[in-house]
Length: 201
Image 1 (cartoon, rainbow, N blue to C red):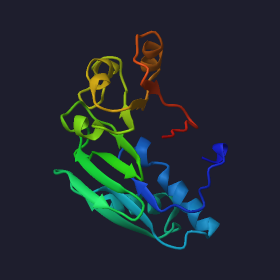
Image 2 (image 1 turned 120 degrees about the vertical axis):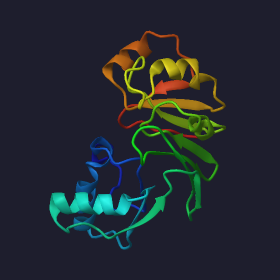
Image 3 (image 1 turned 90 degrees about the horizontal axis):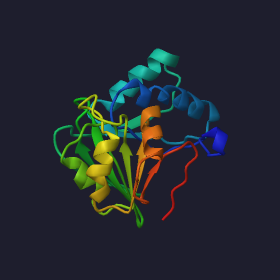
Image 4 (image 1 turned 120 degrees about the horizontal axis):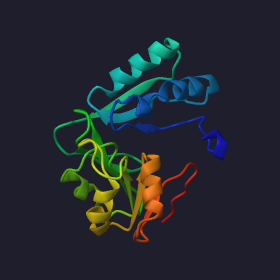
């Protein structure tokens, strides 16, 4: 974030899909940075699966002791669709197929809507997340199915490309996916994510 001159001295919300290390392992360092900056004048709201506050607190304590900013949590069901209306945006969570606590999200910021799967295998809730959003952010780990807990490029091109969404952005990319994407006949509304990517209405 610093590389792209994004201010990270104050954060309102952290939205977490699941508790794998490649998704939450950097949070303790972020919390320590916010503590040291001294500009975080209210607790960060952690939004995520049941157990998110305990998980992040334990991880942060393991890394740095108790040196972190104050945190509160909004913990969402891992079995049912949940919906929240917050001051700045609305968010709806959907159970995903990856780890037992995995959630995907559909968010509305003013007139911009964003859906994100997080890590997951194919499931029917994905279509609900994608429906009528401006940006649908999809994990895409493999070209073809190796694991039932991740989405493939084949599924994106054969299924997701026909969903009712304006743009599809693929993330959580392997080198095989990137290579295959570049030589495939891909619809114009599907793109690969990259560091520093900006999305606009």
